[in-house]
Image 1 (tube, rainbow, N blue to C red):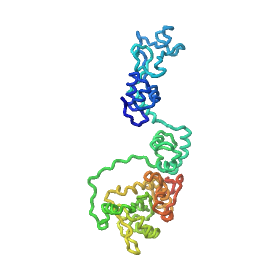
Image 2 (cartoon, rainbow, N blue to C red):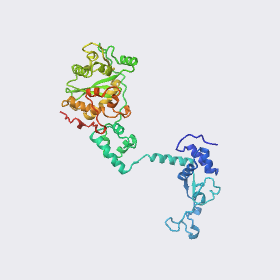
Image 3 (cartoon, rainbow, N blue to C red):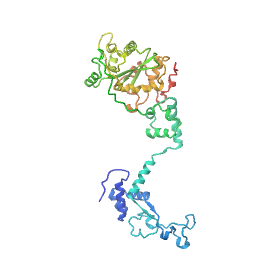
Image 4 (cartoon, rainbow, N blue to C red):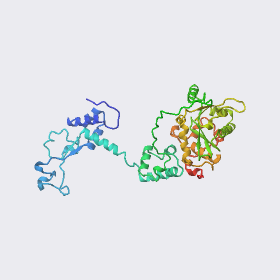
Length: 424
């Protein structure tokens, strides 16, 4: 009988059971190997690594198992004695290395070794598990790697994703291993230095969500209308829109995220008002021209903030009155419907934590922040940066017009030191 062969470099419990049965029947290693479709050397190594030692029971309570016990006639020969030598059966020094099939094993007072499938499988599983603990790197390798990674994390606040994307040749282990090494204190940086290492709480279902009557502005621009439009126009360009506040009453950011490439535009506004949003879009239209604006901002999805309640100023071209964009609103209290931009705001908060004032900022400084964020590699883009991904849909000249430049991978910084602004 042969075991069904499943390609696997690890022996299974069933295969080990066949080895034990074969040894009990005094089958050769070649015959056992044929039974489980493995190499003969695999069987030999398996038996020698996982055989189980059993000392002989003492006759008349004697514990002396020394080969020379009859000459010296000591009751309990110490292993420290020079004359001590264990008596080993010839079966244990060569094939089959165990006593499983021996007919004399019950009468033999020599040291015995057995192969048991369960014992071997349990021992191997434990070894496999424990081998994954600890540090599988030399001190020199850790030191060299720390010199590369530590400044990028501590000084420039780069994300692990960005570092892995731009240093694949230097980092030879997985991200989970990286986090384990940080937990173990292998590197000079700590968990607190990582830009983000949190657990998200499960979103609570709110069965009593606020339901309000649709205003005239929202008619034809609801989230259901949005889904219907993109269903009919699956190739359309979608931009998510939001605002990020500094200190209350001060300057705010208008943020616009091209969903396809995760490319985020950030514009500094004096106040969180409709008038400021209108002025920002007026400048964007003049900067890009009607045709490019129409292509990029075909669909805009935003929340129900009052600053966005003049959609016609965004949708219409001032000169021709042509509709060049379509504004839609998320459902009330459903910011997850534009989750891409919500998540992207994390990068802003790395540099400008909540409570920071934007009043000292200028658009030039905002452009520096925007360029560093768009030059950060993302897992969602297969290690590419939003800047590089956007080159597939926009020319480099257009991107520069929007105020974004490419930052070299190791120069990317998401540290609060980037903009050097206080909390005034």
